[in-house]
Image: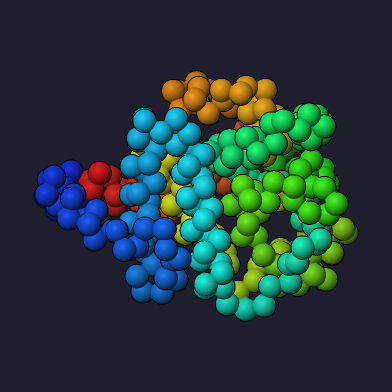
Length: 271
Ligand code: SF4
């Protein structure tokens, strides 16, 4: 009985009440303390409504931008512990980058008119395509967006690029220059912050009935650049990216997938 009640859609008055309670939490840095889960729920619900708003032609890009802004605000307000990353340090911009499709649309729109960069993306996509995800992680294909050791699409760069922050430059040098096989020593609580925002976007995409997994950036970006109307087509159900393999952790069900599924189950009755 209890299980059945938990999956039943709340009535209209209760859903409206929840939206009113969500309002002060929308677009604010996540608390990263008691209250974080409630803030994630509120902002995920907001992103779902954004993705369901068919009046908004670029709603996938808008959802990715909203999540990127929350991530930046939370990193700025809540990061604990030293961060070694600085402008001009780009050793990690040559490994596997996994992105959701809404994030791809933002990056594609920021570089569509740059034919030289688009050509580099197609070259990097061709170099990445034959590689498994594990091979791609250790094969140093330099990101085609990197220019003068800096990200040339900094504002709309993907969530993973915003939030993979290291506490040790020497460790990054060993990992990315010498393939030492170590794990990046992520700074302070930044992994938790990234996890919250990642599951927020993934769960919202699921609840909006859209593909939610991450894909290798170069291959997905090359497709988005080849189709100026990619976002509209994808939102309408066109399987434009079906030939790009999804991230193996999304496909096989890692810890983030379990958290995403739990959030989806929690929010579904409230929408
Ligand atoms: S998109 Fe920007 S931050 Fe991300 S890997 Fe490429 S150059 Fe680096």
